[in-house]
Length: 251
Ligand code: PEP
Image (tube, rainbow, N blue to C red):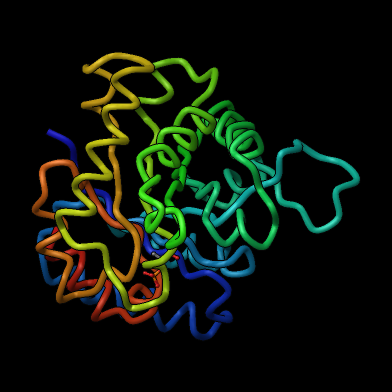
């Protein structure tokens, strides 16, 4: 039985006062319930330090939104796995569609980042997903297969079993359009079957596959009740304590 994992990707939102307000609101709301899911927040780099202090002793775990391919040195603006570990991160998102789109990150780069994250003792949240054009051309399954194979290339089964894959159809991110539960479940099944083909059924059954794309309080339960949907990667709805809490409660 896979534990559901709900992660909030804050993107480029929230300065320090806003970070304090959001985390305090979340802690208060979560303290009022028994939280069965793993809860992760991924604030921007500038808020990680204060977030680490605020989440101490709570159920909330810390993640980052991206990481450098390199360990240290002359890479202006980059942040390493070791730096993220030292500020309390346990998870790092790699290959978000906004990184693929605006920073031209390929499956090869994402694969190298996932390997760095795992080598550093942290866990990657590896994002895959088709564009609207690809869905309309009926090549979603091929796109997902290529992305999963590329992003997992060379990883041993033990590392894959610990990793999280996030299925994020690009056309559903930040658009208010959500994949139907059937569309999402079908894509998750494809991803799991690609992992079965690459490794084994045993490995594939251990991998947590999150859905991301306009997950909200009112659609979370339906999506999360699908057999292959093991959690959510949440953008917009994680920026308010009440809507993020409602998704966690649904899980
Ligand atoms: C995301 O950016 O990963 C995401 C899923 O965003 P939203 O929930 O706003 O669609």
